Each structure stands twice: as structure tokens, then as C-alpha cells.
Amino acid sequence: MSDSVGSKCGLVALIGRPNVGKSTLLNYLIGQKLSITSRKPQTTRHRILGIKTTDDVQIIYVDTPGLHSRNDKALNRYMNKTVGSVIQDVDVILFVVDRVRWTEEDELVFSNLQQASCPVLLLVNKSDLLDDKEVLLPFIDKISKRRVFSEIIPLSALKGHNVQELEKAIVHYLPQGPFMFPAEQLTDKNSRFIAAEFIREKITRQMGEELPYEVAVEIEEFREISGILHISALILVEKAGQKKIVIGQDGKRLRLIGSEARKDLERLFDIKVMLKLWVKVKGGWSDDDRALRSLGYD
Ligand code: GDP
Ligand code: MG
Image 1 (tube, rainbow, N blue to C red):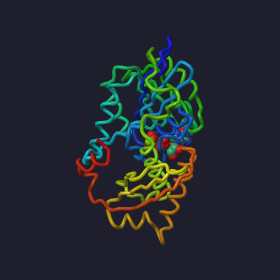
Image 2: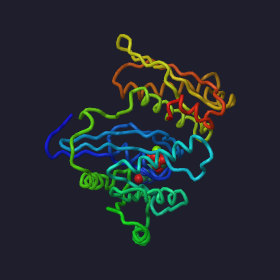
Image 3: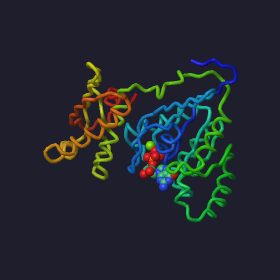
Image 4: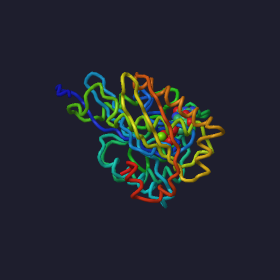
């Protein structure tokens, strides 16, 4: 831990509806792959902390699940609760929007900002896709009349445009204080959790539109034996049909998911990985609070 005089440390939340680019931005800011990105919305269900430490500044990023306008399942209730509690205990909020595309879901997230007392930075992401920058001014004008933002920053999380400027702004608003985590620590989630997220990302990539929304990954074994990391993971789906899809013809798809995930895990943990994947049907868990808790969504 650092207790150097003049150091800055704080929690920074990324909020915004699904698909605006929160995970992409987090990955860029951290400079290492920790969060999950995908063309499919709603892949980030957990609060993932990415920690960036440089000299005398420690920024702890909180990636939140997207807010949902349909609030009819236990999983969605969990996600909404996460957003509410995150907003109240952070030092800076990054409110991410997709250019000037303001939807009902943005409005929902925006209304949640009323509970925030810390500085809120509005990030107008995907600026690289804006052909006509002229549309920005009226948008900024309109939204500024509804709420005061500490900064409004157009940027591209994908290309990295203006991300350094964003980082400077974040540091500016960060409170003085000692580091909360050792400087070398990347995340406060344990490695098991990261492994599960990596596997889930590969499933998402492999399946695309076929992906059963309620897929979850549970790590059963995570053990290093003589220089090899043995990981066994359960892929939980809701229906027998989904199990077939994940496994694929002659197990082809599951093998592909496994080998892709293994490569990433070996790179991340810097060790040889033996990965075993199983697919299991667990009907209806997303509608059952108790089952959610047992899967670690508490
Ligand atoms: P999240 O749901 O808010 O975490 O969004 P993601 O980070 O998963 O991004 C959703 C999609 O938008 C992905 O396909 C990203 O590659 C894409 N994306 C994110 N940021 C940008 C950006 O600045 N420019 C462009 N062109 N695409 C982006
Ligand atoms: Mg995400």
C-alpha cells in the first residue's frame, strides 16, 4: 500500500445503457483485457473492477451492467440494484452515450444520475462514427440544460481518440488519498472470476445471435499442479436445445470455445493451462433469486 503524501485514489464508475462502449473504454483505459466486450449487448453482468496505478495516482474503475427498461426477471433486478448502489459510492461517474443517439434506456440511466453527488463526466463515445460533428453542439446544448456535467468529452473508445484527455480529467476530479490496492494489482476479483468471464466471452463470440441470453459459467476447479493451471468450468444453459447448440456438431463448437479461451487464459496468467468445459442444463435459474445467489450473483 502507498501512503505517500499527495497521492490520489478513487472509484470511477462507468455507467450507460448496453452497447455504448463501456467495456471497450475500460479496456482501453486499463490497457489490459479485463472486461468483456462484444457486439451483443448485456454481456457484462458483473461489476468488474479494473485498477490503474501510475506513480502517485490509483484509479479504480467499476464497470456496471447496463440498465434495463424491462425489469421483470431476477437477473435484471440484480443488475438495476448494482447500478443504484454504484452511483452512490463512487468518486467520479463516467456517463457514456453513443454519439447523439438518445434512447429510452439512456433516459433511464440519466434519471439514475439524480442520486449522484460526485462529479459526472458525459462521454460522447464513438465519435469516429460521426460524419457530421455539427450535430454535437445542439445535443450538448440540450443535455446541459437538463443537468450540469463537470465535463463533456467527445471520444472514441475504440480508436483511443481523446482518451488521454479523459484520463487527465478523471485524475483532476479524483480525491487525495492513499492507494486502496497494491500498485501491481490488476483487479480485486479473483482469478477464477476472470477465467469464467473469459470463457463466457468466447461463448458469446462463437455463438453470436444464437447465444442463449442466460448462459453462465461456473468454475469448478482452479488448481496449479506442477506448472500447469488446471481449470474445469461448467457452462450453464437453460434448455436442452441450448446445450446442443453450445456443444455443436461432434463437440466442434465447444472445442473451439475451449481452445480460444485457453489461449487467452495462458496469456493472462502467464502459465500453461489445461481447460475442461462441461455444458449443463439448469432450467429457469435467471428467474430464481436463490439460484442466482448460489452462482455468485449476490
Ligand atoms: P458496453 O455494452 O457498453 O460495454 O459496450 P461494448 O464496449 O461491449 O461495445 C459495444 C460495441 O460498440 C462493440 O462492438 C464495440 O466494438 C463498439 N464500440 C465501442 N466503442 C466504440 C467507438 O468508440 N467507436 C466505434 N466505432 N465502435 C465502438
Ligand atoms: Mg460491457
